[in-house]
Image: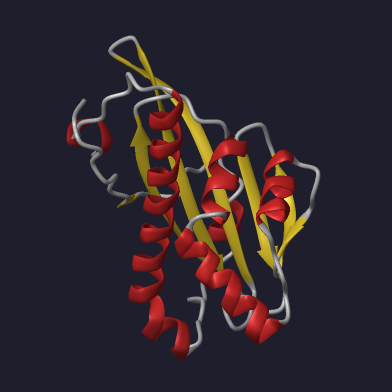
Length: 194
């Protein structure tokens, strides 16, 4: 079996048909990152994996220490399965069969997840999407450019890097889970890059 290659998340346009698109059209900053895994992944598997990675557990600790919002792996599982409507500081805004949109009302941020199954050379692959939306300081009027805080503007490159790393960590977790349960899975760098 070939060595497990780390997946690489790449930036993409926010698809117009998604739950994240209306926030972008309303003047929010919105980003989108994506990568492809060489097997079928459900939205529920993706979300649970995302919120239970070591990298995100660090954020969960920070949210507990500074916002008093405790979250557990079981909470992540409940959110993913649709039996919970909140996770740490986020609340569910909307769910569809392949998307989840969460919002954090105080800071004005949203998190978005989507899975899309595709057929490539008669094999099923899954494209994972993760994105964020940040509301401007005030809602822009027609023709006005949205204004964001200087803190967000300065930290945006770090935010984008962190978002990519969160998506990649979730994909690695999914790959490891699949490798543990299906020894025949092989992954090449070409499988994971767009």
